[in-house]
Length: 136
Image (cartoon, rainbow, N blue to C red; front, side):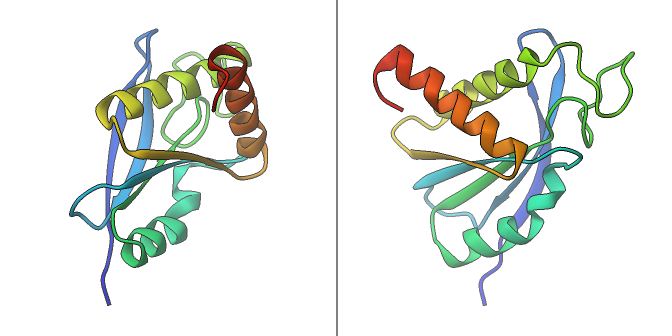
C-alpha cells in the first residue's frame, strides 16, 4: 500500500503573522491541490485521516490544511486561543494563502474543502472571487 507523507510549515501573511499548516503528499508529479479549512474549535490536524488517505490513493494530489488564526498552532500574540483581532482577518488569511498556493503552483487544479465553519469560509471566498473575476 502506498503512503502519504506529512510536513508542517507556516504561510507568511501580509501583516507578518505566520499561519501554521500541515501538508500531505505522496510525492511525484503534482496534478491537484486541496486546501482544507477546519471548523470552530478545530485545527489542521483534524484532516489527518483525509491527508493520509487521499494522496496515497489518488496520485498527484496534495492536501494543505491551514490552522485558522486563533486555533491550533496559529494563535496571535496578545489573544486567547480561539480569538482573532477581527473576523474579516479569517477571510483575508484564506485569500492570502490561496494566492500563495496558486502562484507557486500555476496550471495545477486547485480546490477548497471546508468542514463546518470552514465550509462557510470556503463558500464566501469562492463567492468573492467569482464577483471579482467572473469565475471561481
